[in-house]
Length: 149
Image (cartoon, rainbow, N blue to C red; front, top):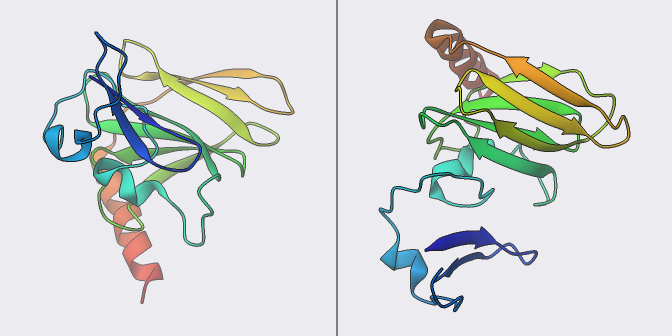
């Protein structure tokens, strides 16, 4: 099966052998373990959306090959890393700045600690290397929770 998101912000499922849409896909594939995950909508990624987002603010998402992290590219020039899954609103994240305007795409390399991003107006390609810092992610989560008070 193939999972996609359309421009009307609907999650769609298709049979890869016939190309036909599976209209019962949301319930039929609820617990599916996807080889890759790039859908910007869904239970697994509810927490990536900033407050007051209009649905077009996040341009791209990719889950790491080991399934522990997802990255987003947004209209504000940021590349963000979240734990995966991140089903809660205002999920903690690490934010990285490098592009001079909106970021159009993010993709992980097969080696989990490399991430590629492409810029819009700056027409650049960045390669990011990261190490998952569990202590740092916990600090970011605590800071995000403190902002709610």
